[in-house]
Picture 1 (tube, rainbow, N blue to C red):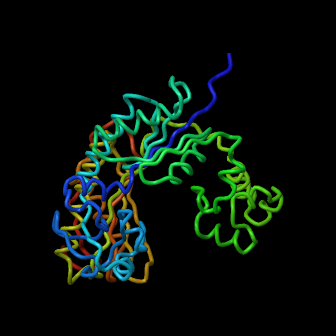
Picture 2: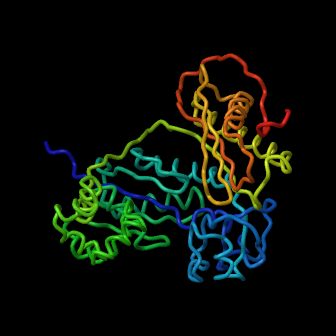
Picture 3: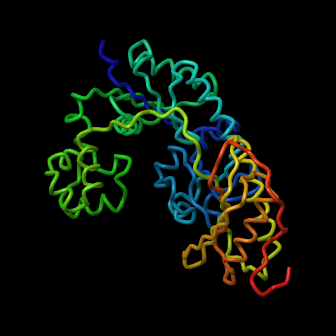
Length: 377
């Protein structure tokens, strides 16, 4: 008996953070809303009034129609849509809704790969029913569990499924068979494929390649010559809709990290109190993430970014794994000493890697905090 033909779905929640906020505040329905920046919990203001750093985490489709997009700097977004509304993100609320929608999907199709707070891959190959029927059941279950809509693409593999889920947003459903690739996929621009980023898109455009169809027509040797053997082969396979990557139902995290970009550049001596508070908060959040994921970590690190965007990292490996916030703070403090931060900082981050699911006790270490080199603790 032949194994069932692969049938992979990609589910993407529609403007997820903004949709959760609208669910909590129905008066925001139909208004351009941007999630990002920092403010008191629930504080709503005009985007044009925002001053400071940060990027757009997500935006409603009304805001996107005004030229705002995810990842855009908030000041640039404010110039494009000054009358849009701005809310700081509430990640705890978003994670709670995320857990609900994933549990609802698992009740129908349990072979799920978690790809983030708002998206999953689903292997439907062995699930009875037509693709259209299954997708409608899943969409209805998500709506019932969360009150929100999602967009789904179903195709023979992950690459095509992810591409399809973005073709009919919001609340979309796109089904694709392999025979339809030339007519429906090849006319699309190359940057629609996950893995073809801005630099590759620009380089392809310089070489006269703009669509996936044009990319599919390129000789493998030509692609290897211009992009190297490995990435050139990826481009060739992507253009032809080839992807054998399985849906992985469980992957252990490699690292856990938290970081923050400051509203203004902070000096390690003059702003020491604020840096200490932020540093302690990041360590607590990382420890909480480790506990939530059921893991411990041995390697503790820090990340520093300066006003000119230079980035410095330092790490320290402990004798035994930990997820205790105080031990994480002590080790991260030692990394700060090694970094010798004497300049103003734009960003500060704390990271734990070398993760394991087997806890062990370890020796206690000296308490360290934010103390620049040459300054007494």
